[in-house]
Length: 166
View 1: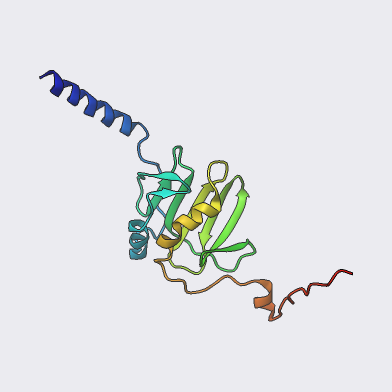
View 2: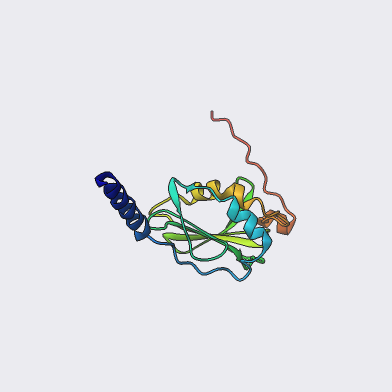
């Protein structure tokens, strides 16, 4: 009888402790109901940049870390032409907005629906987070790619030729 009481108390304590953090509160994106977002969400990894996955309270979202240091929303407005930098990480083009540094916002480019990832760079590496999310994000087909100045202007940047030292 005493063992059953201890077991019940232990289960109750574990339930209370696991509920302390609660779900991460996020707003769903405008196109969160897009079926492609469901494909992304079911492929999300359990860890991102070594941070464990957290429960969220909004459709087509993901969060990792405690406190949450990586946030994902699927179904955000896709970027059109922009002067913001574009980084290709393992075949996925990401528009990088560092206007809120050390919090960086990365939004897929050339994929509809677009996926937005916000990373607290004080807690995790943005590159590691994007690498870890690459498989899930790649489930949305890429239809266009980022262009650089040479692509737009039709020029090519010559490859520097090493000059022998005397």
